Amino acid sequence: MFRVVRKMEWHPTITELWVEAPRVAKKYKPGQFIIIRMNEKGERIPLTVVDTDREEGTICLIFQKVGKTTFQISLMNPGDAFMDVVGPLGRPTHIENFGTVVCVGGGVGVGPLYPIAKGMKEAGNRLVSIVGARTKELVILEDRMRAISDELIVTTDDGTYGMHGFVTDALKQVLDSGEKVDLVVAIGPAIMMRFVSKTCEPYKVPLTVSLNSIMVDASGMCGACRVSVGGVTRFVCVDGPEFDGYQVNFDELMKRQQMYLEEEKKALERFKKEHPEAFQGVC
Image 1 (cartoon, rainbow, N blue to C red):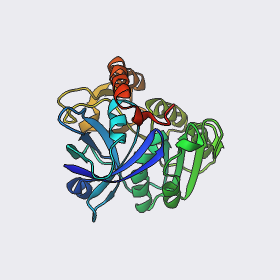
Image 2 (cartoon, rainbow, N blue to C red):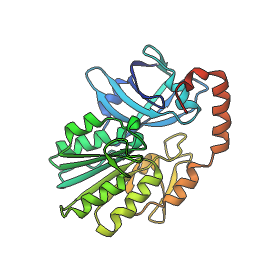
Image 3 (spheres, rainbow, N blue to C red):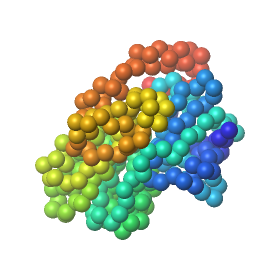
Image 4 (cartoon, rainbow, N blue to C red):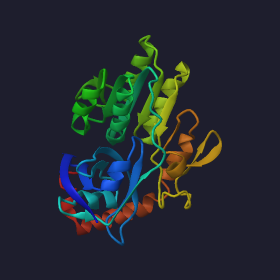
């Protein structure tokens, strides 16, 4: 069993958990993820590791409450335990001294971006970080990102905090500034990463994105996470989760993310009736 040791609510829809998983904490590298399951009947879902405490043997998970399982997990408190925590999975981020690296995170995508950005800074890169959210209350990890960045730009869609606009607006400003950018790393909703790719394309700057496809077994066997990259079928769980952003077929990815939408809605409605306490403060 994998015990929850700490919990923090960033927002009624965003939760942070620190979970005992000593072997995962020991082996984890930036960019990798885990598969968790609450109990024997629980859904297996992927979550990216945000941070680790190797001495304590814990890993940090930050997730947004979207479907039945994430709302269910949000009810866990210190002392509760997951049945399964499998990982670390996926290929770790390739980190070296590229020069100037721009890390772009949207929403809870800032969570998995943080260890990558930290690794890039520790490798000697000049780090420009751009973090965005719909509104001020949904901005996460600002202090931690600021502490590791040479420059941090915060954007909000509604202008309630930082720069009024999208992360792509801030990214374009950086790319237009005249400073040579050697690599862009983007993590967030698929639609955000798609527009980051379009923003970067005229500048021909190398671009890495981390994909958030549907996963079941995370071993490459089920095929649920398949995506077209450069016209070739790849499996996000074993070939990724990171790929060249210019090569990803985002239209196909977004369609596949909607495959089980009706089933997900029904499961969420049933859970809402059974556990209304999980939805307090959620619009």
